Image (tube, rainbow, N blue to C red; front, side, top):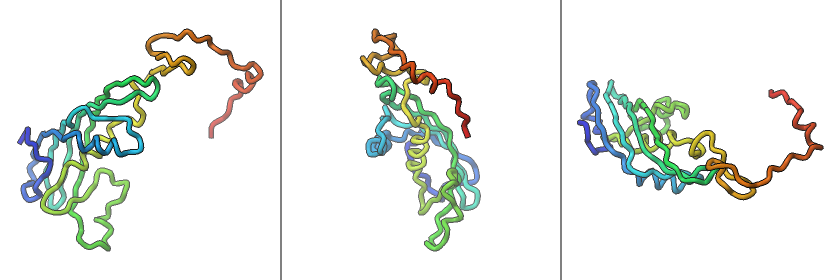
Length: 185
């Protein structure tokens, strides 16, 4: 079933024999989430490439896979636009939802990241894929780890070369403070 475009699995068709599907998750949904969030640093440049292997043991469905996408962002230090590849492996164990609201949800806790629940006849793969992509994005957009940023005086991108600003020496009266060594607890 490679190359299938469905993002939902019919529970009754999932067997104990592992199957694999590959599809593209549209970027519009995740870009809406990124645009609506408190930090709007990233934007996907195209669809998310997803490969998923799945099988069932009893009522539990086991899903594992890989996703890959390219996102664009503006560097937090030098303000240059760059692209960042996002690749992530993931896996989930999905258990059927219990109908009784007084139940504790199948004993699932918030820290059980790899565990989730499904309800109904189909399992929608879009929410866990979006979640995994958000987890794959770096928390702070940097064009590279050693980005030198911008000169605070003239705004020159220090990655491209030194600026012509005179270097200001710190106040010598504060020199004693620089020599203090504090022990961290």
